[in-house]
Structures are given as structure tokens and as C-alpha cells.
Image (cartoon, rainbow, N blue to C red; front, side, top):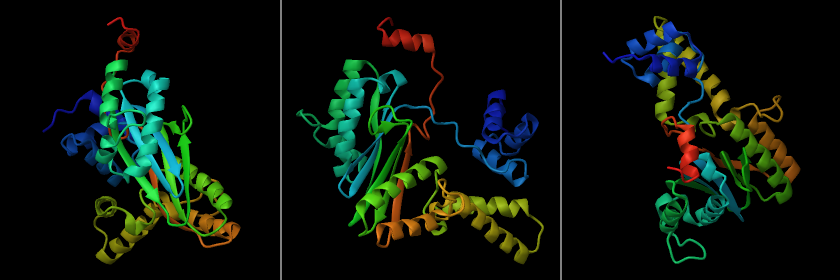
Amino acid sequence: MADITAGMVKDLREKTGVGMMDCKAALAATNGDMEAAVDWLRAKGLAKAAKKSTRVAAEGLVAVAVEGTTGAVVEVNSETDFVARNEKFQAMVSQISKLAVKAGGDTEKLKTMNFPGTSHAVAEYVGEMVAAIGENMTVRRTSVLTVSDGVIGSYIHNQIAPGMGKIGVIVALESAGKKDELANFGRMLAMHVAATNPVALTLDQVPDDVLARESAILEEKNAGKPANVLEKIVASGLKTFAKENCLLEQAYVHDGAKTVAQAVADAAKAAGADVKLTGFVRMQLGEGIEKKEDDFAAEVAKMSGQS
């Protein structure tokens, strides 16, 4: 059996809002597996849903660039927020985001592209910046969306500099309609995505492992009920999951009386042509990266050249 530490219990409590003793019991029952413990608590009805992951810790910037009918999002990490606010770092990220539009969502290709105004590849230029600033940096990931006719809507949350911040979103709207109407709606929709963090456009696009996990929780929660009843409960539960996590079925944050699908239909009327939402990308700084707790005094000393 895994050694259940006070820190593990505290982390699970922060994720779920469940009491310490129940969190300890969940970790003991799942041999210390944090994600399994979250599911255990949900299945027992002790946690309605896990809170957003607390693993977002890496610093740097997420940037968005749109050129014509193509848009890109890129994440460039640094060790500290000091560097993220450095004008040279921001200028570098801005240039990398523009190159990302042409990289087609291929991070390794982006790293090999020529950095503007130099004879170096992006990866080499980033290496020079590491040497100049004295802090590790990396081009972590990028993603691209394109439309044949229409617009790419974009939004930056917690903007630190133009086109750069903590969360970057792009949405793809295929339409022959009025581009100004589409652009306005695209930005509003990108803001919605930033706020709600949907899993997919529709339920049939949700990854199989996610659906299997949700189904398993519902089945365990209702264990002992007849198979035909359990089947209906799972189906109903997945419909609820879709309303909360699938973009087109979510309640539109700018008008809770309609779904996003209905908002798209309204946008089509305003644009004077059919509108199809074909995709979205939401990138949040540092998601999925764990970072050790920093010694703030040491960090300041490092930045001022005293260590």
C-alpha cells in the first residue's frame, strides 16, 4: 500500500472540496492514485466534480496570431514571471507566434524555422536568449486552425502584451457571410471557450477514454440497479456531461438562455449566410506541468545577478 502523506490529502481536498478524512480514505482505497481517488469520491457522491487541475505552474506566455483564414496558438515557457514580462522575451514570442501560423501545428517544424532577422533557427535563437537572460526557456507546443472561407476568431485572457497572455483561444468559423459580423462573433465565442474550457465540439468527438471514465463513475454510483435502468442512467448522465463540456451544447456565457449552437444560428442570420463552427483551440499557460515551489528571495537574487 502506498504511503498516504498529509500533502497528498491536502492536494486532493483542494481539488475536490471534500473533507480531509474522506480524502484520506479515497487515497487509501486507490493506493495513492490521485486521479483514481477523485473518481472514487465522485462515485461515492462525495464530490460532484473535480475542481480544475492545480498543476498549472509553468511561467511564460501563450500567444495568438491570425493571418487571413489561418490562426495559430503557441506556448513559450520561461522559469519565472519576471521573464514573461521582459520586453525582449515578449518580442521573441510575438515573432514565434507569427511563424507558428505557417508551421501547421507542428512544434518541431516551428523550432527549425528561420527566426526573422537572423540566420538561426527558432530553437537556436531561443538558446541565445537563454544565454542572454540566464533563464531556461522552451517552445512547448503550438496548434493551428484554418478555414477555406470565413474567419478565425481569437481571444487572449490575462493579456500581458498585445496578442499574449495566460490563456489563448482561436475558433474556426466557416462562412461566406459578412466578415465583420463573423469576426465580432468569433471573438465573443473565443471568450466563451476561455471561460468554459470545453472538452470537444460535440459528444461524439469526446475522447473514448474520457467517455469510458464518466460512464464507469455513473455505473459505480448506481451499482445494483437493473441493467436496463442503469443503461438509461448512463445515457442521461452523458447528456448532462455534454451540456457541461461539449461546446455546441454548452449554455452560451453571453446569453444563458441559449446554447452555443443557437448562438451560431443567430450569428448566421446576422452574417447573412450559413455559419459552421469547425473547431477550437484553447491553450492555457503551463497546463499539465508540475513545478517545484520557488524560493522567492532566491528568485529575486537570481534576477538581479546576486547568485
